[in-house]
Length: 482
Image: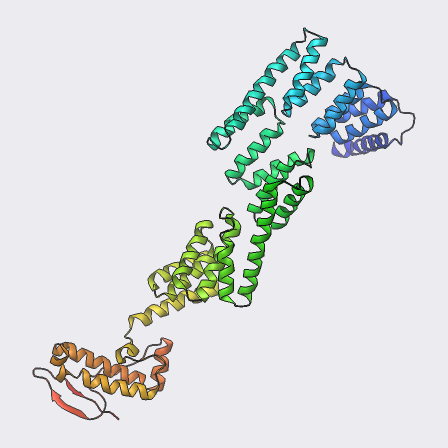
């Protein structure tokens, strides 16, 4: 069936196109009109407009031709062109009842209530018994009241109530521009940015100079983090109305926000962490409702504050990022790093494992291993702390501190230090272990890396004896000062 239909479709389309551009000579207006009606029935509205236009060029004094083309325009949602054709039909025949009826319906559907009322009243003047006109006037009044109610309740009722009021408008005025603009504002409040873009896009096809539609669509693009389209729509709005204050403010805001973001990213790339942090922080205050772009800004703060070793504020920035976009792996990763940096190892490991489960990358696996190693190092004895020295201490400092600590905490002096003998023995043993590791180059290097280090675990210090034992104990504490 499809193979047989193709030649017919090709021939029909070719003939239709030829008629539209006027290449078929000798075609009567009746034939052209019939072809236009067939195009309408087939849903080929653009072709129908062309065919009716061709007929109008042959006879521009026929009100019927303008009415038919207006119907095709309505199917294409080109209401402005349809309205002009209805008006032309009425100009050609001032008593054309269908002209007034259809124009009045179109005007009512777009919420031009005063003009619609004039048409219906004119229709009743020409034919007082016209039932359609009376019905239309009733629907018009219903639509007018519904729109007034919706506009009056703007901002003072819930979104559900606003939608209900608008639904009543659309029941009788489906193409009401004011209602569509109000609906877009409700959708914007509900953060249905994609819906606003689609709805205002359709409206702008018929009214490309509608400033409010351009403004609302631009604002939605901004919240969708589409800088180019946002600026384009605000620019178009200002082209048609240079004094439109909201569009001016939004256009300025978009430029400022993305400028801050670009400068922050450049500073971060150049590892100027302080400048990047300052720029990211300033940008987050420009529009707190712009969640998509603010996610990127707070993530930038999360990273740069970690680089600046501002652990606590880095964690806070990461948490804000995750509030805006839950489950964002990059934010979870830097939160784990900041927690590691602040010494909150258990929470850091839990967070890093969460990130690794979401994205099994080598980088995140290494982070998990790094935190596990830090946990292991934190659980072992801190030999530097035991000797009271810095990790950068030289060999001479190690030895000097060891001597002082050994004298101070020798078990013989337990009482003077306010310790029991058992506490002094434990302290004394720790000092011996610390010195054994930190005075040996290889053992110290292994300890610093977090590797396991074998310690002899005896209680004696290397070298000569103090010669002091303890009653009831086998331990004999001895050391030398090298």
